[in-house]
Length: 595
Image: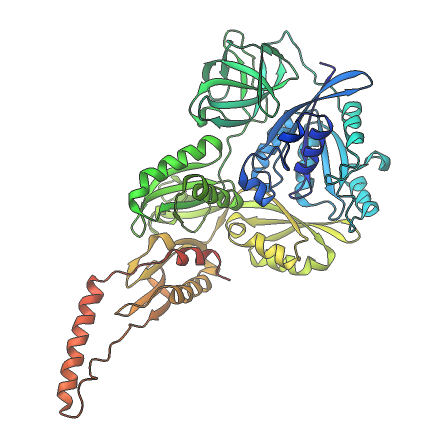
Protein backbone atom coordinates (compact mmCIF):
# COMPACT_ATOMS: atom_id res chain seq x y z
CA UNK A 1 0.00 0.00 0.00
CA UNK A 2 3.01 2.31 0.38
CA UNK A 3 3.18 2.58 -3.39
CA UNK A 4 -0.37 3.92 -3.90
CA UNK A 5 -1.13 7.63 -4.16
CA UNK A 6 -4.74 8.87 -4.45
CA UNK A 7 -5.20 12.50 -5.45
CA UNK A 8 -7.76 14.77 -7.09
CA UNK A 9 -7.45 17.97 -9.10
CA UNK A 10 -9.42 20.97 -7.84
CA UNK A 11 -9.70 24.42 -9.41
CA UNK A 12 -12.11 27.10 -10.60
CA UNK A 13 -13.76 26.66 -14.05
CA UNK A 14 -11.35 27.05 -16.94
CA UNK A 15 -8.09 27.06 -14.96
CA UNK A 16 -6.76 24.11 -16.96
CA UNK A 17 -7.57 21.01 -14.84
CA UNK A 18 -8.40 18.67 -17.71
CA UNK A 19 -5.45 19.82 -19.86
CA UNK A 20 -3.01 19.21 -16.99
CA UNK A 21 -4.60 15.79 -16.40
CA UNK A 22 -3.91 15.05 -20.11
CA UNK A 23 -0.21 15.86 -19.59
CA UNK A 24 0.02 13.62 -16.51
CA UNK A 25 -1.55 10.75 -18.47
CA UNK A 26 0.93 11.29 -21.32
CA UNK A 27 3.93 11.57 -18.98
CA UNK A 28 3.09 8.24 -17.31
CA UNK A 29 2.49 6.54 -20.72
CA UNK A 30 -0.95 5.41 -19.57
CA UNK A 31 -2.28 5.78 -23.12
CA UNK A 32 -0.76 4.98 -26.49
CA UNK A 33 -0.30 8.11 -28.61
CA UNK A 34 -2.81 6.90 -31.20
CA UNK A 35 -5.56 6.68 -28.52
CA UNK A 36 -4.81 10.13 -27.17
CA UNK A 37 -7.03 13.16 -27.75
CA UNK A 38 -7.35 16.48 -25.94
CA UNK A 39 -9.45 16.40 -22.73
CA UNK A 40 -9.10 12.62 -22.86
CA UNK A 41 -11.03 12.16 -19.58
CA UNK A 42 -14.03 14.20 -20.78
CA UNK A 43 -16.20 11.55 -22.38
CA UNK A 44 -19.12 13.72 -23.55
CA UNK A 45 -19.00 15.83 -26.73
CA UNK A 46 -20.73 18.54 -24.71
CA UNK A 47 -17.82 18.66 -22.24
CA UNK A 48 -15.31 19.06 -25.05
CA UNK A 49 -17.25 21.78 -26.86
CA UNK A 50 -17.89 23.90 -23.80
CA UNK A 51 -14.51 23.20 -22.28
CA UNK A 52 -16.05 22.23 -18.92
CA UNK A 53 -16.03 19.00 -16.92
CA UNK A 54 -19.55 17.86 -16.04
CA UNK A 55 -18.79 14.48 -14.43
CA UNK A 56 -15.87 13.46 -12.20
CA UNK A 57 -13.45 11.17 -14.07
CA UNK A 58 -11.03 8.72 -12.51
CA UNK A 59 -8.01 7.02 -14.07
CA UNK A 60 -5.14 4.87 -12.72
CA UNK A 61 -1.59 5.63 -13.85
CA UNK A 62 1.69 3.75 -13.23
CA UNK A 63 4.88 5.69 -12.64
CA UNK A 64 8.44 4.62 -11.85
CA UNK A 65 10.58 6.82 -9.61
CA UNK A 66 13.99 5.87 -8.13
CA UNK A 67 13.50 2.30 -9.35
CA UNK A 68 10.17 1.87 -7.51
CA UNK A 69 6.82 1.43 -9.25
CA UNK A 70 4.00 3.63 -7.97
CA UNK A 71 0.25 3.49 -8.66
CA UNK A 72 -1.30 6.96 -9.02
CA UNK A 73 -5.10 7.23 -8.88
CA UNK A 74 -6.19 10.57 -10.33
CA UNK A 75 -9.72 12.01 -10.06
CA UNK A 76 -10.46 15.01 -12.30
CA UNK A 77 -13.38 16.95 -10.81
CA UNK A 78 -15.90 19.48 -12.20
CA UNK A 79 -15.09 23.14 -11.50
CA UNK A 80 -18.61 24.57 -11.59
CA UNK A 81 -20.46 25.42 -8.37
CA UNK A 82 -23.51 23.33 -9.43
CA UNK A 83 -21.51 20.10 -9.06
CA UNK A 84 -19.85 20.86 -5.73
CA UNK A 85 -21.32 17.79 -3.94
CA UNK A 86 -19.63 15.51 -6.47
CA UNK A 87 -16.36 17.36 -5.84
CA UNK A 88 -16.74 16.91 -2.05
CA UNK A 89 -17.10 13.10 -2.44
CA UNK A 90 -14.09 12.96 -4.78
CA UNK A 91 -12.09 14.86 -2.15
CA UNK A 92 -13.20 12.34 0.51
CA UNK A 93 -11.76 9.52 -1.65
CA UNK A 94 -8.23 11.03 -1.74
CA UNK A 95 -5.25 11.72 0.50
CA UNK A 96 -3.99 14.68 -1.52
CA UNK A 97 -5.15 17.39 -3.91
CA UNK A 98 -3.53 19.36 -6.69
CA UNK A 99 -4.78 22.93 -6.26
CA UNK A 100 -4.49 24.50 -9.70
CA UNK A 101 -4.54 28.28 -10.01
CA UNK A 102 -4.47 30.12 -13.34
CA UNK A 103 -1.37 32.37 -13.35
CA UNK A 104 -3.24 34.92 -15.51
CA UNK A 105 -6.39 35.16 -13.33
CA UNK A 106 -5.34 34.41 -9.76
CA UNK A 107 -7.50 32.83 -7.08
CA UNK A 108 -11.25 32.64 -7.82
CA UNK A 109 -14.28 31.84 -5.66
CA UNK A 110 -14.65 28.16 -6.51
CA UNK A 111 -10.92 27.62 -5.84
CA UNK A 112 -11.40 28.80 -2.25
CA UNK A 113 -14.59 26.83 -1.71
CA UNK A 114 -13.04 23.54 -2.95
CA UNK A 115 -9.80 24.24 -1.07
CA UNK A 116 -11.65 24.60 2.27
CA UNK A 117 -13.37 21.25 1.64
CA UNK A 118 -9.98 19.62 0.97
CA UNK A 119 -8.45 21.14 4.12
CA UNK A 120 -11.46 19.97 6.19
CA UNK A 121 -10.76 16.40 4.99
CA UNK A 122 -7.10 16.77 6.01
CA UNK A 123 -5.73 16.45 2.46
CA UNK A 124 -2.14 17.33 1.56
CA UNK A 125 -2.42 20.32 -0.78
CA UNK A 126 0.07 20.80 -3.64
CA UNK A 127 -0.39 24.30 -5.09
CA UNK A 128 0.34 24.61 -8.82
CA UNK A 129 0.49 27.73 -10.98
CA UNK A 130 -0.85 26.78 -14.39
CA UNK A 131 -0.66 28.62 -17.75
CA UNK A 132 2.86 29.90 -17.06
CA UNK A 133 3.53 30.04 -20.81
CA UNK A 134 0.96 32.86 -21.28
CA UNK A 135 2.20 36.40 -21.84
CA UNK A 136 -0.35 37.69 -19.30
CA UNK A 137 0.89 35.41 -16.46
CA UNK A 138 1.57 37.21 -13.14
CA UNK A 139 3.43 34.50 -11.19
CA UNK A 140 4.73 36.69 -8.34
CA UNK A 141 1.36 38.33 -7.59
CA UNK A 142 -0.55 35.03 -7.75
CA UNK A 143 2.06 33.28 -5.54
CA UNK A 144 1.44 36.01 -2.93
CA UNK A 145 -2.29 35.19 -3.07
CA UNK A 146 -1.64 31.45 -2.63
CA UNK A 147 0.75 32.04 0.30
CA UNK A 148 -1.88 34.28 1.97
CA UNK A 149 -4.58 31.67 1.40
CA UNK A 150 -2.81 28.44 2.43
CA UNK A 151 0.10 29.77 4.43
CA UNK A 152 2.52 27.49 2.53
CA UNK A 153 6.19 28.15 1.82
CA UNK A 154 6.67 30.16 -1.36
CA UNK A 155 9.13 27.69 -2.90
CA UNK A 156 6.65 24.78 -2.55
CA UNK A 157 4.40 26.32 -5.23
CA UNK A 158 5.05 24.51 -8.52
CA UNK A 159 5.03 26.26 -11.89
CA UNK A 160 3.51 24.40 -14.82
CA UNK A 161 1.83 24.74 -18.17
CA UNK A 162 -0.80 22.28 -19.32
CA UNK A 163 -0.42 23.38 -22.91
CA UNK A 164 3.37 22.95 -23.28
CA UNK A 165 3.84 20.20 -20.64
CA UNK A 166 6.25 22.33 -18.58
CA UNK A 167 6.67 21.25 -14.94
CA UNK A 168 4.79 17.92 -15.28
CA UNK A 169 7.74 15.82 -14.04
CA UNK A 170 8.08 18.03 -10.96
CA UNK A 171 4.35 17.54 -10.26
CA UNK A 172 4.68 13.73 -10.43
CA UNK A 173 7.71 13.79 -8.10
CA UNK A 174 5.87 15.98 -5.59
CA UNK A 175 2.80 13.74 -5.69
CA UNK A 176 4.95 10.78 -4.63
CA UNK A 177 7.04 12.75 -2.12
CA UNK A 178 4.34 14.88 -0.44
CA UNK A 179 1.07 12.94 -0.62
CA UNK A 180 0.88 10.21 2.06
CA UNK A 181 -0.05 6.63 1.12
CA UNK A 182 -3.57 5.52 2.11
CA UNK A 183 -4.17 4.40 5.69
CA UNK A 184 -6.47 1.57 6.59
CA UNK A 185 -6.84 -1.89 8.05
CA UNK A 186 -6.86 -4.91 5.74
CA UNK A 187 -8.47 -7.16 8.35
CA UNK A 188 -11.29 -4.78 9.26
CA UNK A 189 -14.78 -5.19 7.69
CA UNK A 190 -15.06 -3.80 4.14
CA UNK A 191 -15.74 -0.07 3.95
CA UNK A 192 -15.69 1.50 0.47
CA UNK A 193 -16.84 5.01 -0.46
CA UNK A 194 -18.77 5.46 -3.74
CA UNK A 195 -17.64 8.71 -5.34
CA UNK A 196 -19.26 8.36 -8.77
CA UNK A 197 -21.42 6.07 -10.89
CA UNK A 198 -22.03 5.69 -14.61
CA UNK A 199 -24.56 3.75 -16.66
CA UNK A 200 -23.46 1.08 -19.11
CA UNK A 201 -26.30 -0.08 -21.34
CA UNK A 202 -25.08 -3.71 -21.40
CA UNK A 203 -23.98 -4.15 -17.79
CA UNK A 204 -26.14 -1.74 -15.77
CA UNK A 205 -24.79 0.77 -13.27
CA UNK A 206 -21.03 0.80 -12.68
CA UNK A 207 -20.14 2.32 -9.28
CA UNK A 208 -16.69 3.84 -8.70
CA UNK A 209 -15.35 3.45 -5.16
CA UNK A 210 -12.30 3.86 -2.96
CA UNK A 211 -11.68 1.18 -0.32
CA UNK A 212 -11.06 2.70 3.12
CA UNK A 213 -10.77 -0.59 5.06
CA UNK A 214 -10.89 -4.28 4.21
CA UNK A 215 -10.83 -5.91 0.79
CA UNK A 216 -13.21 -7.11 -1.93
CA UNK A 217 -13.17 -9.97 -4.47
CA UNK A 218 -15.48 -10.88 -7.37
CA UNK A 219 -18.47 -12.92 -6.18
CA UNK A 220 -18.62 -11.24 -2.74
CA UNK A 221 -22.10 -10.59 -1.32
CA UNK A 222 -22.13 -6.85 -0.63
CA UNK A 223 -24.66 -4.28 0.51
CA UNK A 224 -24.99 -0.51 0.05
CA UNK A 225 -25.19 0.95 3.53
CA UNK A 226 -27.52 3.96 3.10
CA UNK A 227 -29.63 2.53 0.27
CA UNK A 228 -30.01 -0.79 2.16
CA UNK A 229 -29.75 -2.89 -1.07
CA UNK A 230 -27.79 -6.15 -1.42
CA UNK A 231 -25.92 -7.41 -4.50
CA UNK A 232 -23.31 -9.91 -5.65
CA UNK A 233 -20.14 -8.36 -7.08
CA UNK A 234 -20.01 -9.78 -10.63
CA UNK A 235 -16.80 -7.94 -11.42
CA UNK A 236 -14.39 -5.62 -9.61
CA UNK A 237 -11.38 -3.94 -11.13
CA UNK A 238 -9.36 -0.77 -11.61
CA UNK A 239 -10.00 2.21 -13.87
CA UNK A 240 -7.57 2.66 -16.70
CA UNK A 241 -9.14 4.36 -19.71
CA UNK A 242 -11.09 1.10 -20.04
CA UNK A 243 -12.14 -1.17 -17.17
CA UNK A 244 -9.48 -3.73 -16.10
CA UNK A 245 -10.92 -6.60 -14.01
CA UNK A 246 -8.93 -7.76 -10.96
CA UNK A 247 -9.24 -10.79 -8.65
CA UNK A 248 -8.69 -8.72 -5.51
CA UNK A 249 -8.75 -5.09 -4.35
CA UNK A 250 -7.51 -4.04 -0.90
CA UNK A 251 -7.73 -0.86 1.20
CA UNK A 252 -6.40 2.26 -0.55
CA UNK A 253 -7.37 0.97 -4.01
CA UNK A 254 -9.66 2.98 -6.26
CA UNK A 255 -11.76 0.82 -8.56
CA UNK A 256 -15.19 -0.08 -9.90
CA UNK A 257 -17.86 -2.67 -9.13
CA UNK A 258 -20.39 -4.13 -11.56
CA UNK A 259 -23.29 -6.01 -10.02
CA UNK A 260 -26.11 -5.77 -12.56
CA UNK A 261 -27.88 -2.82 -10.92
CA UNK A 262 -30.49 -1.34 -13.25
CA UNK A 263 -31.89 1.51 -11.14
CA UNK A 264 -29.79 4.65 -10.78
CA UNK A 265 -31.52 5.67 -7.55
CA UNK A 266 -30.06 2.65 -5.74
CA UNK A 267 -26.48 3.84 -6.26
CA UNK A 268 -25.99 7.11 -4.44
CA UNK A 269 -22.77 9.09 -4.59
CA UNK A 270 -21.33 9.15 -1.05
CA UNK A 271 -22.82 5.78 -0.03
CA UNK A 272 -20.71 3.05 1.63
CA UNK A 273 -20.25 -0.52 0.30
CA UNK A 274 -19.75 -3.28 2.88
CA UNK A 275 -20.04 -7.08 3.13
CA UNK A 276 -23.37 -8.65 4.10
CA UNK A 277 -21.91 -11.33 6.42
CA UNK A 278 -19.33 -9.07 8.11
CA UNK A 279 -20.69 -5.52 7.81
CA UNK A 280 -18.90 -2.41 9.07
CA UNK A 281 -20.49 -0.78 12.13
CA UNK A 282 -21.03 2.64 10.56
CA UNK A 283 -21.06 4.30 7.14
CA UNK A 284 -18.32 6.69 5.99
CA UNK A 285 -19.40 10.15 7.19
CA UNK A 286 -20.42 13.01 4.94
CA UNK A 287 -23.15 11.22 2.96
CA UNK A 288 -25.87 13.57 1.73
CA UNK A 289 -28.89 13.12 -0.48
CA UNK A 290 -28.28 15.52 -3.39
CA UNK A 291 -31.00 18.15 -3.20
CA UNK A 292 -32.17 19.89 -6.37
CA UNK A 293 -32.09 23.70 -6.07
CA UNK A 294 -33.92 24.83 -9.19
CA UNK A 295 -37.16 23.44 -10.62
CA UNK A 296 -38.56 23.85 -14.12
CA UNK A 297 -41.27 22.17 -16.19
CA UNK A 298 -40.15 20.30 -19.33
CA UNK A 299 -42.91 19.66 -21.89
CA UNK A 300 -42.78 18.05 -25.35
CA UNK A 301 -43.63 20.51 -28.16
CA UNK A 302 -45.80 17.75 -29.65
CA UNK A 303 -48.13 16.13 -27.10
CA UNK A 304 -47.69 12.70 -28.76
CA UNK A 305 -44.01 12.67 -27.70
CA UNK A 306 -44.88 12.48 -23.97
CA UNK A 307 -43.93 8.80 -23.53
CA UNK A 308 -40.76 9.30 -25.55
CA UNK A 309 -39.80 12.25 -23.34
CA UNK A 310 -40.34 10.11 -20.20
CA UNK A 311 -38.10 7.40 -21.68
CA UNK A 312 -35.41 10.01 -22.55
CA UNK A 313 -35.41 11.59 -19.08
CA UNK A 314 -35.23 8.15 -17.41
CA UNK A 315 -32.21 7.28 -19.59
CA UNK A 316 -30.55 10.59 -18.67
CA UNK A 317 -31.19 9.94 -15.00
CA UNK A 318 -29.18 6.72 -15.23
CA UNK A 319 -26.14 8.80 -16.15
CA UNK A 320 -26.96 11.69 -13.84
CA UNK A 321 -28.58 10.66 -10.55
CA UNK A 322 -28.90 14.28 -9.37
CA UNK A 323 -31.69 14.89 -11.92
CA UNK A 324 -35.15 14.36 -10.37
CA UNK A 325 -38.52 14.44 -12.15
CA UNK A 326 -42.22 13.94 -11.49
CA UNK A 327 -45.07 14.06 -14.03
CA UNK A 328 -47.25 17.18 -14.07
CA UNK A 329 -49.76 18.74 -16.43
CA UNK A 330 -50.41 22.30 -17.48
CA UNK A 331 -53.55 23.76 -19.07
CA UNK A 332 -51.39 25.67 -21.55
CA UNK A 333 -48.78 23.03 -22.42
CA UNK A 334 -50.45 19.66 -21.82
CA UNK A 335 -48.58 16.79 -20.11
CA UNK A 336 -44.92 17.07 -19.11
CA UNK A 337 -42.53 16.74 -16.18
CA UNK A 338 -41.45 18.94 -13.30
CA UNK A 339 -37.69 18.43 -13.13
CA UNK A 340 -35.28 19.34 -10.31
CA UNK A 341 -31.76 20.54 -11.17
CA UNK A 342 -28.67 21.41 -9.13
CA UNK A 343 -28.48 24.85 -10.75
CA UNK A 344 -28.95 26.74 -14.00
CA UNK A 345 -25.89 25.25 -15.73
CA UNK A 346 -27.15 21.76 -14.87
CA UNK A 347 -30.56 22.65 -16.34
CA UNK A 348 -28.97 23.99 -19.53
CA UNK A 349 -26.88 20.82 -19.94
CA UNK A 350 -29.88 18.53 -19.46
CA UNK A 351 -31.83 20.49 -22.12
CA UNK A 352 -28.90 20.26 -24.51
CA UNK A 353 -28.47 16.51 -23.89
CA UNK A 354 -32.18 15.86 -24.47
CA UNK A 355 -31.85 17.63 -27.80
CA UNK A 356 -28.58 15.93 -28.88
CA UNK A 357 -28.77 12.43 -27.52
CA UNK A 358 -32.52 11.82 -27.84
CA UNK A 359 -33.57 14.33 -30.51
CA UNK A 360 -36.32 15.67 -28.20
CA UNK A 361 -37.86 19.06 -28.94
CA UNK A 362 -38.98 20.46 -25.57
CA UNK A 363 -40.48 23.60 -24.04
CA UNK A 364 -38.98 24.60 -20.69
CA UNK A 365 -41.00 26.78 -18.32
CA UNK A 366 -39.64 29.54 -16.11
CA UNK A 367 -37.24 28.00 -13.55
CA UNK A 368 -38.14 28.55 -9.91
CA UNK A 369 -36.99 27.33 -6.50
CA UNK A 370 -38.92 25.39 -3.87
CA UNK A 371 -40.75 27.31 -1.16
CA UNK A 372 -42.09 26.25 2.22
CA UNK A 373 -45.68 27.25 2.82
CA UNK A 374 -46.97 27.27 6.42
CA UNK A 375 -50.77 26.97 6.46
CA UNK A 376 -53.26 28.19 9.05
CA UNK A 377 -53.79 24.51 10.03
CA UNK A 378 -50.11 24.28 11.09
CA UNK A 379 -49.14 22.18 8.08
CA UNK A 380 -45.90 22.66 6.09
CA UNK A 381 -46.16 22.23 2.32
CA UNK A 382 -43.18 22.19 -0.07
CA UNK A 383 -44.17 24.04 -3.24
CA UNK A 384 -42.04 23.51 -6.37
CA UNK A 385 -44.50 25.04 -8.78
CA UNK A 386 -46.55 28.28 -8.53
CA UNK A 387 -49.72 26.40 -9.54
CA UNK A 388 -49.26 24.15 -6.49
CA UNK A 389 -49.65 27.11 -4.10
CA UNK A 390 -52.72 26.78 -1.82
CA UNK A 391 -55.35 29.55 -1.75
CA UNK A 392 -54.48 32.86 -0.04
CA UNK A 393 -56.98 32.21 2.76
CA UNK A 394 -55.14 29.01 3.80
CA UNK A 395 -51.59 30.48 3.84
CA UNK A 396 -50.17 31.73 7.12
CA UNK A 397 -46.72 32.67 5.74
CA UNK A 398 -44.17 31.52 3.15
CA UNK A 399 -40.44 30.86 3.58
CA UNK A 400 -37.90 30.92 0.75
CA UNK A 401 -34.39 29.41 0.57
CA UNK A 402 -31.45 31.75 1.27
CA UNK A 403 -27.84 31.39 0.18
CA UNK A 404 -24.48 32.58 1.40
CA UNK A 405 -22.98 33.99 -1.80
CA UNK A 406 -19.25 34.71 -2.02
CA UNK A 407 -18.06 37.01 -4.80
CA UNK A 408 -14.35 37.57 -5.45
CA UNK A 409 -13.66 40.58 -7.63
CA UNK A 410 -11.18 43.30 -8.45
CA UNK A 411 -11.51 46.46 -6.35
CA UNK A 412 -12.69 48.58 -9.35
CA UNK A 413 -16.00 46.69 -9.58
CA UNK A 414 -16.95 46.55 -5.88
CA UNK A 415 -19.50 49.39 -6.06
CA UNK A 416 -21.46 48.07 -9.02
CA UNK A 417 -21.43 44.48 -7.68
CA UNK A 418 -22.73 45.66 -4.30
CA UNK A 419 -25.53 47.53 -6.07
CA UNK A 420 -26.41 44.42 -8.10
CA UNK A 421 -26.55 42.21 -4.96
CA UNK A 422 -28.56 44.73 -2.95
CA UNK A 423 -31.02 45.14 -5.87
CA UNK A 424 -31.40 41.35 -5.71
CA UNK A 425 -32.48 41.66 -2.04
CA UNK A 426 -29.04 40.66 -0.74
CA UNK A 427 -27.49 41.91 2.51
CA UNK A 428 -23.73 42.39 2.79
CA UNK A 429 -22.30 40.17 5.55
CA UNK A 430 -18.56 40.57 5.13
CA UNK A 431 -15.88 42.22 3.04
CA UNK A 432 -12.29 40.96 3.09
CA UNK A 433 -9.36 42.27 1.06
CA UNK A 434 -7.41 39.20 -0.11
CA UNK A 435 -4.72 41.39 -1.69
CA UNK A 436 -4.48 45.13 -2.35
CA UNK A 437 -6.59 44.86 -5.51
CA UNK A 438 -8.80 41.78 -4.87
CA UNK A 439 -11.70 41.68 -2.47
CA UNK A 440 -14.04 38.93 -1.26
CA UNK A 441 -17.65 40.01 -0.63
CA UNK A 442 -20.06 37.76 1.27
CA UNK A 443 -23.81 38.29 0.87
CA UNK A 444 -26.93 36.68 2.29
CA UNK A 445 -29.28 36.37 -0.71
CA UNK A 446 -32.50 34.63 -1.71
CA UNK A 447 -31.86 31.74 -4.11
CA UNK A 448 -34.79 32.86 -6.29
CA UNK A 449 -32.90 36.04 -7.20
CA UNK A 450 -29.76 34.11 -8.18
CA UNK A 451 -31.66 31.66 -10.39
CA UNK A 452 -32.61 34.08 -13.17
CA UNK A 453 -29.84 36.21 -14.60
CA UNK A 454 -27.57 37.00 -11.65
CA UNK A 455 -24.53 35.17 -13.00
CA UNK A 456 -24.77 36.80 -16.45
CA UNK A 457 -25.11 40.26 -14.94
CA UNK A 458 -22.22 39.68 -12.55
CA UNK A 459 -19.96 38.67 -15.44
CA UNK A 460 -20.92 41.67 -17.58
CA UNK A 461 -20.52 44.18 -14.70
CA UNK A 462 -17.06 42.86 -13.82
CA UNK A 463 -15.95 42.37 -17.46
CA UNK A 464 -15.71 38.63 -16.72
CA UNK A 465 -13.34 38.99 -13.74
CA UNK A 466 -15.65 38.36 -10.78
CA UNK A 467 -16.11 34.76 -9.65
CA UNK A 468 -19.04 33.49 -7.66
CA UNK A 469 -19.77 30.57 -5.34
CA UNK A 470 -22.83 29.87 -3.18
CA UNK A 471 -24.16 27.37 -0.67
CA UNK A 472 -27.55 26.99 0.98
CA UNK A 473 -28.17 28.68 4.31
CA UNK A 474 -31.66 27.65 5.46
CA UNK A 475 -35.02 29.31 4.88
CA UNK A 476 -36.31 32.78 5.79
CA UNK A 477 -39.75 34.37 5.79
CA UNK A 478 -40.59 36.39 2.70
CA UNK A 479 -43.48 38.49 1.36
CA UNK A 480 -44.18 36.49 -1.78
CA UNK A 481 -47.16 36.79 -4.10
CA UNK A 482 -48.31 34.63 -6.99
CA UNK A 483 -48.28 36.56 -10.26
CA UNK A 484 -50.62 35.21 -12.95
CA UNK A 485 -50.59 36.08 -16.64
CA UNK A 486 -54.00 36.16 -18.33
CA UNK A 487 -54.66 36.11 -22.07
CA UNK A 488 -58.23 37.24 -22.79
CA UNK A 489 -59.11 36.43 -19.19
CA UNK A 490 -57.65 32.89 -19.35
CA UNK A 491 -54.78 32.02 -17.02
CA UNK A 492 -51.59 30.74 -18.73
CA UNK A 493 -50.27 28.61 -15.86
CA UNK A 494 -46.85 28.02 -17.48
CA UNK A 495 -46.08 31.75 -17.18
CA UNK A 496 -47.11 32.05 -13.51
CA UNK A 497 -44.38 33.02 -11.07
CA UNK A 498 -43.96 33.31 -7.32
CA UNK A 499 -42.30 36.67 -6.82
CA UNK A 500 -41.45 39.12 -4.06
CA UNK A 501 -44.18 41.70 -3.50
CA UNK A 502 -41.86 44.67 -4.15
CA UNK A 503 -40.83 43.37 -7.59
CA UNK A 504 -44.25 42.13 -8.72
CA UNK A 505 -45.56 45.35 -10.37
CA UNK A 506 -42.40 45.97 -12.35
CA UNK A 507 -42.06 42.32 -13.39
CA UNK A 508 -45.74 42.08 -14.41
CA UNK A 509 -45.51 45.21 -16.55
CA UNK A 510 -42.35 43.99 -18.31
CA UNK A 511 -43.82 40.56 -19.06
CA UNK A 512 -46.95 42.13 -20.58
CA UNK A 513 -44.85 44.41 -22.78
CA UNK A 514 -42.67 41.49 -23.90
CA UNK A 515 -45.63 39.23 -24.69
CA UNK A 516 -47.21 42.03 -26.74
CA UNK A 517 -44.14 41.97 -29.00
CA UNK A 518 -44.01 38.18 -29.29
CA UNK A 519 -47.61 36.97 -29.64
CA UNK A 520 -48.78 37.21 -33.28
CA UNK A 521 -51.83 39.39 -34.00
CA UNK A 522 -55.18 37.66 -34.46
CA UNK A 523 -58.51 38.68 -36.06
CA UNK A 524 -59.61 39.93 -32.62
CA UNK A 525 -58.16 42.03 -29.79
CA UNK A 526 -56.07 40.11 -27.26
CA UNK A 527 -55.85 41.49 -23.73
CA UNK A 528 -52.65 40.55 -21.89
CA UNK A 529 -52.99 41.08 -18.14
CA UNK A 530 -50.78 40.49 -15.12
CA UNK A 531 -52.78 39.79 -11.97
CA UNK A 532 -52.18 39.15 -8.29
CA UNK A 533 -55.25 37.27 -7.13
CA UNK A 534 -58.23 39.21 -8.53
CA UNK A 535 -56.29 42.47 -8.83
CA UNK A 536 -54.99 43.38 -12.32
CA UNK A 537 -51.66 45.18 -11.99
CA UNK A 538 -50.64 45.60 -15.66
CA UNK A 539 -52.29 45.38 -19.07
CA UNK A 540 -51.33 45.50 -22.74
CA UNK A 541 -53.65 44.99 -25.74
CA UNK A 542 -52.68 43.40 -29.04
CA UNK A 543 -54.89 45.12 -31.60
CA UNK A 544 -56.86 43.02 -34.06
CA UNK A 545 -55.86 42.63 -37.69
CA UNK A 546 -58.74 44.53 -39.37
CA UNK A 547 -60.23 44.12 -42.79
CA UNK A 548 -61.77 47.26 -44.29
CA UNK A 549 -65.32 45.97 -44.90
CA UNK A 550 -66.67 49.41 -45.89
CA UNK A 551 -64.30 49.68 -48.88
CA UNK A 552 -67.02 48.58 -51.32
CA UNK A 553 -69.48 51.26 -50.09
CA UNK A 554 -69.00 54.47 -52.01
CA UNK A 555 -71.58 57.21 -51.55
CA UNK A 556 -75.08 56.22 -50.50
CA UNK A 557 -76.68 56.21 -47.07
CA UNK A 558 -74.55 56.01 -43.86
CA UNK A 559 -76.80 53.19 -42.62
CA UNK A 560 -75.31 50.83 -45.28
CA UNK A 561 -71.82 51.34 -43.83
CA UNK A 562 -73.14 50.93 -40.30
CA UNK A 563 -74.86 47.67 -41.23
CA UNK A 564 -71.57 46.22 -42.57
CA UNK A 565 -69.62 47.38 -39.48
CA UNK A 566 -72.23 45.81 -37.15
CA UNK A 567 -71.96 42.55 -39.06
CA UNK A 568 -68.14 42.61 -38.70
CA UNK A 569 -68.46 43.39 -34.96
CA UNK A 570 -70.69 40.32 -34.43
CA UNK A 571 -68.20 38.10 -36.26
CA UNK A 572 -65.30 39.45 -34.16
CA UNK A 573 -67.27 38.83 -30.96
CA UNK A 574 -68.01 35.23 -31.97
CA UNK A 575 -64.38 34.72 -32.95
CA UNK A 576 -63.15 35.98 -29.57
CA UNK A 577 -65.38 33.41 -27.86
CA UNK A 578 -64.10 30.43 -29.85
CA UNK A 579 -60.64 31.64 -30.96
CA UNK A 580 -57.67 30.54 -28.87
CA UNK A 581 -54.32 32.30 -28.54
CA UNK A 582 -51.17 30.34 -29.40
CA UNK A 583 -48.24 31.31 -27.16
CA UNK A 584 -44.98 30.74 -29.08
CA UNK A 585 -41.98 29.01 -27.43
CA UNK A 586 -40.01 32.28 -27.75
CA UNK A 587 -42.45 33.86 -25.26
CA UNK A 588 -41.55 31.31 -22.54
CA UNK A 589 -37.84 31.87 -23.17
CA UNK A 590 -38.26 35.66 -23.21
CA UNK A 591 -39.45 35.59 -19.62
CA UNK A 592 -36.00 34.30 -18.66
CA UNK A 593 -34.25 37.13 -20.46
CA UNK A 594 -36.44 40.09 -19.63
CA UNK A 595 -33.64 42.63 -19.72
